Length: 210
Image (cartoon, rainbow, N blue to C red; front, side, top):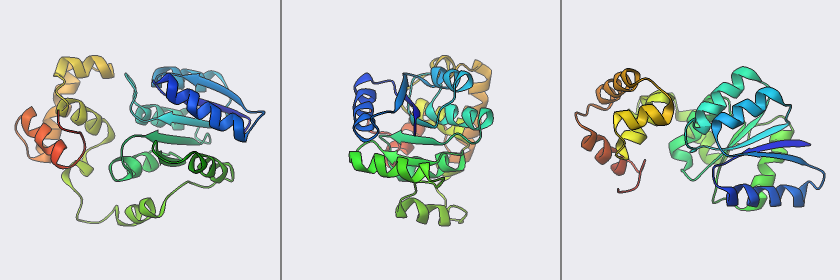
């Protein structure tokens, strides 16, 4: 891995990752950006060997950026980092084309282990993720697992108390588009109000109590 780009909206997180990478790969060339929009633009204009991206960034999320990167440069491996558990996002990001998913609480050697595996052309998948992948086509899915990636992002924002207007601004979407997505989310989850969304999200450990 000679050229790596890191995307995270927290500078201290980027600095920590950079230090780990430089300790392991002294000659590595690292680019850092703080949001999904900048990440996609950098990938369009430059050649990288690996993308390491946070999942939850302001504006365009890491999941959205991942989907666009796989359209622009399908062969470019993307490792997604997140504070969220594997149960919540691993299957989504792997199905979207990620080369691996790693919780931010993982030890530094786990990051290097993931990078080494990805560098050999393989996916970084823990036994827990592998089991979930095997069962991902089962009939016992939770309702929120049936949401599309876009619906899931909007669902989280609404459950966190954002208004339709705020969601539209955050995701750069038309208000009518967000409203349409909200209707589909409500139908799929069989809920009626935003308060119901919040209770559902807390119960299923998708958000913490607000």
